Length: 203
Image 1: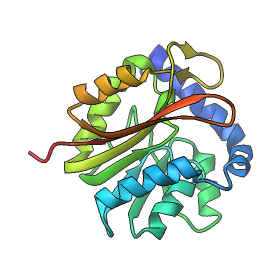
Image 2 (image 1 turned 120 degrees about the horizontal axis):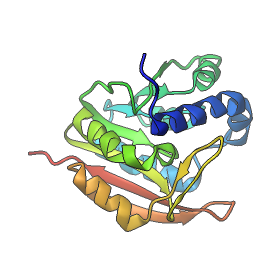
Image 3 (image 1 turned 90 degrees about the vertical axis):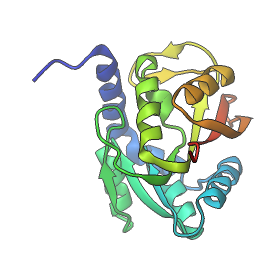
Image 4 (image 1 turned 45 degrees about the vertical axis):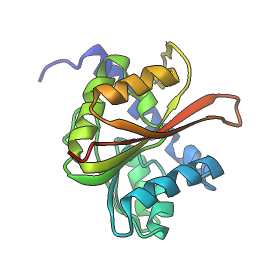
């Protein structure tokens, strides 16, 4: 077995850290989605339509998927952290283990959802990941993603990569998707977030 690359090592360290933090995180986000994310999820659901099939990457505790399901959307829940999937299973929700860097995504889907997750993807892997997401979408399919706003990155247990709004829009375009909507917000900790809704061209 080959040795993981430095980028993959960072990703695996982040996943391992969430394994130990999952229950505390689950308690913190018990009231999700927040009003901003709810608005973004409603926009996604409107594009997808009742009965649409959405891949959620990084489901975590699964609250966003819960909300989409109340709108008539079918969600394939996935996460790279086993403990998050176990917590969802405890309340009757089925999820699958999936690492967006190393695993095939399947599809085609009507949409891919990745809120508060891709900012953990190493910078040198983001183009590969976005291209993989674009390939998993049907023509006309949608992609909803939120990223930490800024420049640089942090190391440690949770590897975090910051992207400027313009920089990430360029990455979306390079993956072959068109920006349909975006919004900038500040969370309760004072951190900036950019949320993007992109669409894969129909032809």
